[in-house]
Length: 127
Image (cartoon, rainbow, N blue to C red; front, side, top):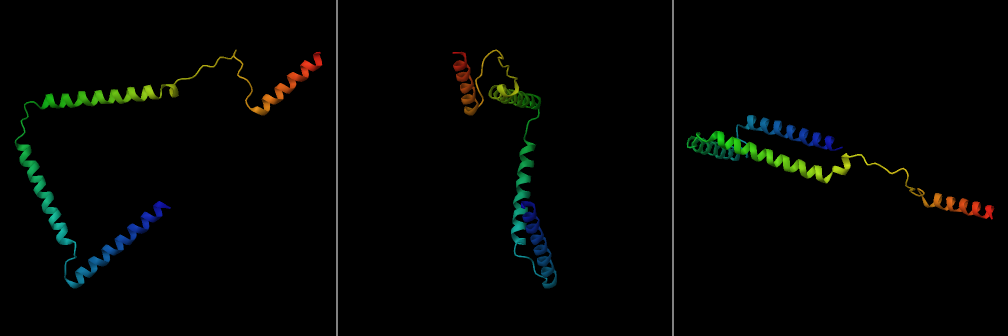
């Protein structure tokens, strides 16, 4: 059902896009969101220019040390997560051994009543 709803919404948006584009071409006017899109493009472009200028100031002499530090920290965090899950769910992955010599009793109250009734019959019969 969710897939159908998403399909209908996307179909509606595609039809709306084609309708707006057709109206834009026939009238020769820009759509109302185009100025907003141009401003967003300018902001993204300026952000990329700032990152590019910042990247030019980075010293690459210690890059090997930085990458080794990142790898060691990732490895430590993965080991910690693995230990956490192993500790929390160790009983889930290990097979439990049952003691067959121990009497576990009856499975339900009805069977317990039946077994008690049979024991009482045996005791009465023996007397």
